[in-house]
Length: 439
Image (cartoon, rainbow, N blue to C red; front, side, top):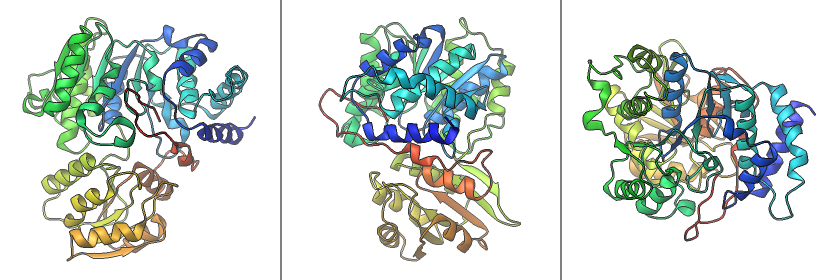
């Protein structure tokens, strides 16, 4: 089997969609030798900021001298981004080997119960991290939490970044229902650290923590530790833009403090880890051409768009960017347009390279309504839009992580190639009472 063939095999698993329950993942992990039993985890769920918080935790513990596994999704360019050890992507040859090893086990599942793409990748990651003798794994949920494939582990700590509206068709139409799904990662007696501030969602998390007798720590923007020079978490320069990243940093720091007795990390190592954190595609500022700044941000829901808007208003002043916007159809794209369009001098709407893309002309219409003064046009592709904005001094590319991943590849800013974003596609069933899914 070649790497391309292994990727095609994983791609074909998308046909099995996204299913409810953890039975498949438990069974597949058992066939693989239950590698999760050899590992320690920090499990991270939430609507926005999961990946950034995971990256911060990974960077802190790696700075502290640990061998750290990192499991995240979706990937921006290459599938291999999902499974990393000390920020080294899993080698292509190991992807081939793990796929080859798992294939016979998949035949032991009856018709109608075939493991999904995400279930298979979850067990691949567990195998790799165990083989690599990782001392800690930073473990991000796919979608939801309660019945997400990642929830077969018992972590050292459960982290919930925040709760906002996203994936309502699968997680429920209220913040309380969404919080119940995210809070499903809370385990009996395992500490919970959250930056959730909405009262409806926080009430659910507090109730769940009490029921599970799980110690709860709440981090909020008003007392973010990063603002205190005497704090172990103080970082004079967190290299990720946005006030929301300061809160994510405080959340990561609070998690490390909670676990100090189990995994001690000196204050200077916490600061060093935060100062060196790298997480592409999230408010990533680059110099593309002489005199041009480009900001790449995968603001794929309304809360993400609001965070991008606040950062533009606070840190870029009166600069009116050219906005290149592409959104997925199953997102609240009208409100994303209403949030971002008023900030732009000109707007170029593009299709996302996904079967779930929103229609670029419809995006353009929504942007014109939100900002009648802006020049608005549609482009047949992101590549065409980037050509049109080559002369603009400030450009923002946003609306989807898929789009940002394509931009990184087109701009030659990705350390890997592969065009494997199609693996991020999945099909799921609508939300049903008492059920959740993973992606």
